[in-house]
Amino acid sequence: MTGLKKALTSKNIISGWMYFYIHFAMEVLCFFCLKKQIANADVSLLWLFPFVYDALAFVPQAVVGYINDRFPKFNAGLTGIILMVFAALSFWLGILPGRYPALIVLCAGNALTHVGGAEVTIRSSGGRLAHPAVFVAGGAFGVITGTLLSGTNLPYIAVILFLLSAVPFAVLAQKFRFPYVDSRELCKGFNYAKKGIPVSVILFVSVLVVVVRAYMGYCLPMAWKTTALHSVLLYVAMGVGKAAGGILADAYGVKKTALISAAGALPFILLGNKIMIVSLIGIMLFSMTMSITLALNVSVLKGAPGLAFGYTTTALFIGTLPIFFISVKSYLLSSIILSVFTVLSFAALAIIIGKDEKISEQHQ
Image 1 (cartoon, rainbow, N blue to C red):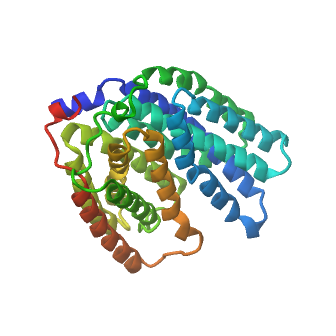
Image 2 (image 1 turned 120 degrees about the vertical axis):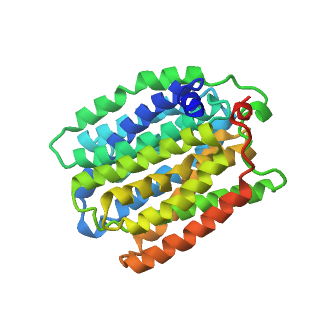
Image 3 (image 1 turned 45 degrees about the vertical axis):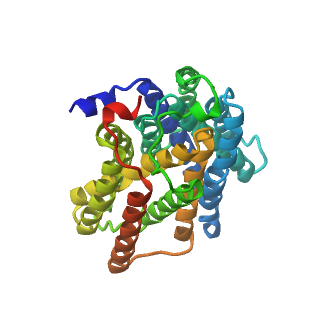
């Protein structure tokens, strides 16, 4: 338990929890707005609004991250919050002409705040994964909360004020970043990629694993998910898994955590099609590799943590593209896809992750 205790109380871990709250609040507002607008949209365009949202919120994060890496003193998180508040005001009061201009502003704010959270948590972690993992986990809780609130009579002003409550955290979290130094030292401690493998190969394989994981997420057999409570439990399992992946990697080793979670998730997911608790365990394990693929990118892009993070979000969008056009409803087909992709992901991670060092030496 010593390693786990150290992972949970590591230096500057508070930056991760601050951005957990920011990420939670921003997704509450984004999905509240998104679902409200979809509810009022023409039936033939129901798919277009979320498609544009995913494309504009996720794909530009690599570019935004690259720019933020060049100007590290810029507070991307705070700027993003301001933009998202303006977008919500526009949806509510009609400040901008039509819903799509407001959607573009909302996506820009979302992208900026995501990059800001990644840059702050990575740069304050000293090579640990728990910080960015905790930050990213907040999104899962925010997505389901915003979705559920959109079905109520809650006014826009309530979610706007809620997101504004995150402003002090966006300002304070900046203070936890290690000062900007030589780019080779910016992300010191991220040494998880296997030595001797070209940078391009590490990036390609880790991004491919993210694409596969994103697509697999929409093939999960869940015959048990029939109520709103089931949806809440699903997103809770995803959020807990994302945070746990980083914490356990810090405590017991990145390679062990990656391979055990990748292989261990499959039987629980397949056997839990009609058994909720079994499925939720599998989904939690399934979500644990998120911070590990990010750490691999940062390991070979030490001077560009924002760009490294942006690659993973672009990969997420690519992985979700098929769901807008193809629906997999067969349990057998889902099982085959999940099994094949799990084997590929396991093999890829086994190849590109370096050997676990002693935890006491890993973050010196």
